[in-house]
Image (cartoon, rainbow, N blue to C red; front, top):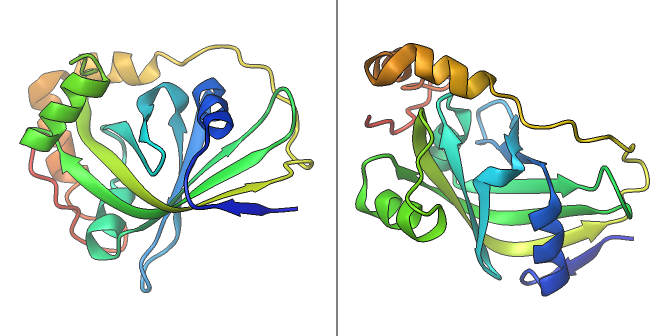
Length: 183
Protein backbone atom coordinates (compact mmCIF):
# COMPACT_ATOMS: atom_id res chain seq x y z
CA UNK A 1 0.00 0.00 0.00
CA UNK A 2 1.28 3.44 -0.91
CA UNK A 3 2.21 5.82 1.89
CA UNK A 4 2.75 9.54 1.56
CA UNK A 5 5.06 11.86 3.49
CA UNK A 6 5.72 15.62 3.40
CA UNK A 7 9.51 15.11 3.43
CA UNK A 8 12.23 12.47 3.32
CA UNK A 9 13.07 10.64 6.52
CA UNK A 10 16.42 9.09 7.46
CA UNK A 11 15.51 5.60 6.16
CA UNK A 12 14.41 6.99 2.80
CA UNK A 13 17.59 9.06 2.51
CA UNK A 14 19.67 5.95 3.25
CA UNK A 15 17.69 4.01 0.61
CA UNK A 16 18.43 6.72 -1.98
CA UNK A 17 22.13 6.53 -1.12
CA UNK A 18 22.20 2.81 -1.97
CA UNK A 19 20.64 3.14 -5.42
CA UNK A 20 22.71 2.87 -8.60
CA UNK A 21 19.98 4.26 -10.87
CA UNK A 22 17.00 6.58 -10.67
CA UNK A 23 14.48 7.87 -13.18
CA UNK A 24 13.25 11.39 -13.85
CA UNK A 25 9.86 12.18 -15.38
CA UNK A 26 8.72 15.55 -16.72
CA UNK A 27 6.14 16.89 -19.15
CA UNK A 28 4.15 19.93 -20.12
CA UNK A 29 0.46 19.98 -20.99
CA UNK A 30 1.38 20.00 -24.68
CA UNK A 31 4.50 17.82 -24.80
CA UNK A 32 5.34 14.18 -24.71
CA UNK A 33 6.12 12.74 -21.27
CA UNK A 34 9.86 12.28 -20.87
CA UNK A 35 11.34 9.57 -18.63
CA UNK A 36 15.11 9.36 -18.30
CA UNK A 37 17.40 6.97 -16.43
CA UNK A 38 20.19 8.61 -14.42
CA UNK A 39 23.24 7.28 -12.61
CA UNK A 40 22.69 7.12 -8.87
CA UNK A 41 26.05 8.69 -8.04
CA UNK A 42 24.93 11.96 -9.69
CA UNK A 43 22.21 12.58 -7.08
CA UNK A 44 22.62 14.42 -3.79
CA UNK A 45 20.10 14.85 -0.99
CA UNK A 46 20.44 18.48 0.06
CA UNK A 47 17.88 18.28 2.89
CA UNK A 48 14.60 16.52 3.66
CA UNK A 49 12.74 18.44 0.94
CA UNK A 50 15.42 19.07 -1.69
CA UNK A 51 17.54 16.86 -3.95
CA UNK A 52 19.68 17.62 -6.98
CA UNK A 53 21.60 15.77 -9.64
CA UNK A 54 24.50 16.67 -11.90
CA UNK A 55 23.35 16.33 -15.50
CA UNK A 56 25.69 15.62 -18.38
CA UNK A 57 25.43 16.26 -22.11
CA UNK A 58 23.05 13.89 -23.81
CA UNK A 59 21.20 13.41 -27.07
CA UNK A 60 18.33 15.62 -25.93
CA UNK A 61 17.41 18.06 -23.22
CA UNK A 62 13.74 17.34 -22.56
CA UNK A 63 13.96 17.69 -18.78
CA UNK A 64 15.30 21.24 -18.96
CA UNK A 65 12.70 22.28 -21.55
CA UNK A 66 9.85 20.83 -19.50
CA UNK A 67 11.07 22.43 -16.28
CA UNK A 68 11.44 25.80 -17.96
CA UNK A 69 7.90 25.59 -19.40
CA UNK A 70 6.07 23.79 -16.59
CA UNK A 71 8.28 22.90 -13.61
CA UNK A 72 6.65 19.63 -12.54
CA UNK A 73 9.00 16.73 -11.99
CA UNK A 74 9.00 13.27 -10.43
CA UNK A 75 12.08 11.28 -9.47
CA UNK A 76 11.64 7.54 -8.92
CA UNK A 77 13.90 4.99 -7.27
CA UNK A 78 13.13 1.27 -7.16
CA UNK A 79 14.94 -1.41 -5.23
CA UNK A 80 16.41 -4.04 -7.53
CA UNK A 81 18.21 -5.77 -4.65
CA UNK A 82 17.24 -6.27 -1.02
CA UNK A 83 13.77 -5.54 0.29
CA UNK A 84 11.26 -4.35 -2.31
CA UNK A 85 10.44 -0.64 -2.39
CA UNK A 86 9.53 2.11 -4.84
CA UNK A 87 10.21 5.68 -3.72
CA UNK A 88 8.88 8.66 -5.66
CA UNK A 89 9.73 12.30 -5.08
CA UNK A 90 7.21 14.78 -6.49
CA UNK A 91 7.79 18.49 -6.80
CA UNK A 92 9.02 21.40 -8.84
CA UNK A 93 12.33 21.28 -10.61
CA UNK A 94 14.79 24.02 -11.42
CA UNK A 95 17.77 23.97 -13.75
CA UNK A 96 21.01 25.53 -12.53
CA UNK A 97 22.89 26.12 -15.79
CA UNK A 98 26.56 25.33 -16.22
CA UNK A 99 28.56 28.48 -15.61
CA UNK A 100 26.03 30.08 -13.25
CA UNK A 101 26.90 31.09 -9.68
CA UNK A 102 24.28 28.70 -8.28
CA UNK A 103 25.77 25.81 -10.29
CA UNK A 104 29.31 26.62 -9.13
CA UNK A 105 28.25 26.92 -5.48
CA UNK A 106 26.40 23.59 -5.49
CA UNK A 107 29.22 21.88 -7.40
CA UNK A 108 31.71 23.06 -4.76
CA UNK A 109 29.49 22.26 -1.78
CA UNK A 110 28.05 18.88 -2.81
CA UNK A 111 30.34 17.46 -5.50
CA UNK A 112 33.68 18.49 -3.99
CA UNK A 113 34.15 20.77 -7.00
CA UNK A 114 34.57 17.73 -9.26
CA UNK A 115 32.91 18.30 -12.60
CA UNK A 116 32.89 15.41 -15.05
CA UNK A 117 33.57 16.21 -18.69
CA UNK A 118 30.34 17.09 -20.43
CA UNK A 119 28.55 18.44 -17.36
CA UNK A 120 25.86 20.86 -18.58
CA UNK A 121 23.63 21.67 -15.60
CA UNK A 122 22.48 20.70 -12.13
CA UNK A 123 18.80 19.90 -11.76
CA UNK A 124 17.29 20.66 -8.35
CA UNK A 125 13.96 19.27 -7.16
CA UNK A 126 12.01 21.01 -4.40
CA UNK A 127 9.95 18.14 -3.01
CA UNK A 128 6.31 18.65 -2.08
CA UNK A 129 5.40 14.97 -1.68
CA UNK A 130 7.29 11.75 -0.96
CA UNK A 131 5.51 8.49 -1.73
CA UNK A 132 6.53 4.90 -1.10
CA UNK A 133 4.90 1.80 -2.53
CA UNK A 134 5.54 -1.90 -2.22
CA UNK A 135 7.74 -2.60 -5.24
CA UNK A 136 6.70 -6.26 -5.22
CA UNK A 137 6.65 -6.34 -9.04
CA UNK A 138 10.19 -4.99 -9.46
CA UNK A 139 12.58 -7.81 -10.45
CA UNK A 140 16.00 -8.40 -8.94
CA UNK A 141 19.03 -7.20 -10.90
CA UNK A 142 22.74 -7.61 -10.24
CA UNK A 143 24.78 -4.43 -10.39
CA UNK A 144 27.79 -4.95 -12.66
CA UNK A 145 29.30 -1.46 -12.58
CA UNK A 146 29.13 1.93 -14.24
CA UNK A 147 29.56 2.35 -17.98
CA UNK A 148 32.48 4.45 -19.15
CA UNK A 149 30.80 5.28 -22.48
CA UNK A 150 29.81 8.84 -21.50
CA UNK A 151 33.33 9.65 -20.28
CA UNK A 152 34.94 8.26 -23.44
CA UNK A 153 32.44 10.06 -25.70
CA UNK A 154 32.92 13.39 -23.90
CA UNK A 155 36.73 13.13 -23.97
CA UNK A 156 36.66 12.33 -27.70
CA UNK A 157 34.44 15.37 -28.38
CA UNK A 158 36.53 17.74 -26.24
CA UNK A 159 35.16 20.97 -24.77
CA UNK A 160 34.71 22.71 -28.14
CA UNK A 161 33.02 19.65 -29.62
CA UNK A 162 30.68 19.36 -26.63
CA UNK A 163 29.68 23.02 -26.94
CA UNK A 164 28.95 22.55 -30.64
CA UNK A 165 26.99 19.35 -29.96
CA UNK A 166 24.88 21.05 -27.26
CA UNK A 167 24.21 24.01 -29.57
CA UNK A 168 23.00 21.63 -32.28
CA UNK A 169 21.18 18.98 -30.22
CA UNK A 170 20.26 20.56 -26.87
CA UNK A 171 18.84 24.02 -27.59
CA UNK A 172 15.28 22.77 -28.27
CA UNK A 173 13.32 19.78 -27.04
CA UNK A 174 11.94 17.16 -29.40
CA UNK A 175 8.61 19.05 -29.22
CA UNK A 176 10.31 22.35 -30.14
CA UNK A 177 10.40 23.85 -26.65
CA UNK A 178 13.24 26.14 -25.59
CA UNK A 179 15.64 24.46 -23.15
CA UNK A 180 17.31 27.55 -21.75
CA UNK A 181 20.74 26.19 -22.73
CA UNK A 182 23.38 28.88 -22.35
CA UNK A 183 26.68 27.05 -22.77
